[in-house]
Image (cartoon, rainbow, N blue to C red; front, top):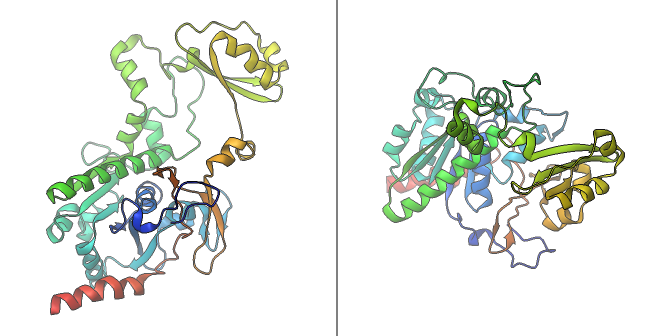
Length: 373
């Protein structure tokens, strides 16, 4: 990884990153588990994506728009940059043995198959721990391993819908609205990365491996901790819907866009401006009226507007990545800074099985040679 020339912090090399030297096997599909593996890769781990031979991760064909690049969805590129790909048919005994050889040498394994799939493949935690007791095994499910929802599809919109994130309010005729992002996938991935990192710290002290489990539903509930706490505390008298949304914060239409306003403490005064008056104001005028009344305000920006803001440019969150023989792509980079340095990698997402033979030579064949000596 190299530091952007516009930043004055010292450049970070891969060997200096916190997770340098660790091997992570990413069996993940779609977004949640692969996003956790991506964060470990950004922090210096070597991440090998173990994919189905031929078709690879289903996310390669998951289009959230009409955008694709070099045959794969831009969504796949964004979540799977900075990784290698090893292709295998896990039902084929020869391929399964090669994967098992990788597992014996890995520090971390990440997967998000439905409950029961890894058991059928013989790659569940107990089986993996038997061949590598020190491994940190991370998994994401939709709803956990117990209860009547265990077999339900762990799909982001469905989890949003049952968890309260779509904002269904018993005191309102407004329909529920899903979040515009795969929110439960991404927060579950962040939670899994946190759990894995904590167990790597413990392993450094005790030598013990670990089984880290996260579910989309539990992550979605944790994301709403303030709202849920208010309801549990106040009981049935708490109105339905976001506890602090109706009076504490709002988005107002103005003649040149929208303004977001948040009451700054309990003493924030009401601002007697009619809807007609507000819509005739500019964003700057609306903010000028609200701020003296103890509201914190900001203009509501589109992505196009945000990227033109000097502050966004100063953050330097955009990087260019390229896969071997592929088209360069601009995407976001790791939001974490280490010792003041922005973490970057020009390594794009892999093609299916792109590194299979190299990994065989480096890891699997070497292991066979070592065990026969």
